[in-house]
Image (cartoon, rainbow, N blue to C red; front, side, top):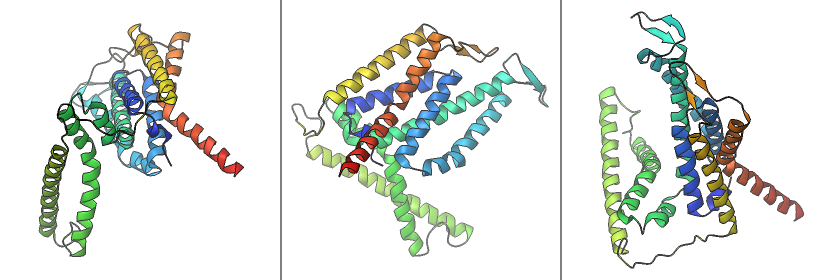
Length: 296
């Protein structure tokens, strides 16, 4: 599907992901974690399809379970003792809950970064920060797109090696190791050559020189203005509510936090509207497109 949110101005995209990532990393309230995880998962599925679901069950769910199990083995704080471990340390409900919350936060951030990589392309990042921090923006842009490109290239190299019988699935264990080292060596060489070519290309274009102008296809229109106002309102309201204790929650020594009073509920609702914003935009655009098609 076409992501309508990606067509917004880079300032809108960057501000949105900055807000949701920062809030996801700092708000440990269970309701906030649940809202952010749900919205990140829905948006990721919209962007990348059903593969995200299988990826979640294969990797994210085991990570959640493993973290929930490992954390109580090292963290023995909490006032609600469930039982005692063999070494005599207590197993507490609070340590288990904190482990689940920490795992949920990590998974949520991973989902948001996957969405970020799909929406905030390298040209958008360079457009935003190319004049302010030219060298750093280029490095960050190359770093953020390195993993997707590396993954795609290693598949190409692996398939090519498989055609000549030199893949990691061919031969004995020692031969497989040699084949894997060979593929890794090819990929390291490719990465270094690609970095040098990119640096030479940008230098030949005068990137970072004072007074350099650049062509841009991005224009800030009324749609972007409305989105910026909405993001600033939601972000400001949520940050103010957090400073006033509206999203307070603690896990130790006992779990305690704000409940479902009117003010906290308004913060939860605002947080949900902020996180779900791209999905709502996409659904609205899809309905518009279907309505146009039906009239043809």
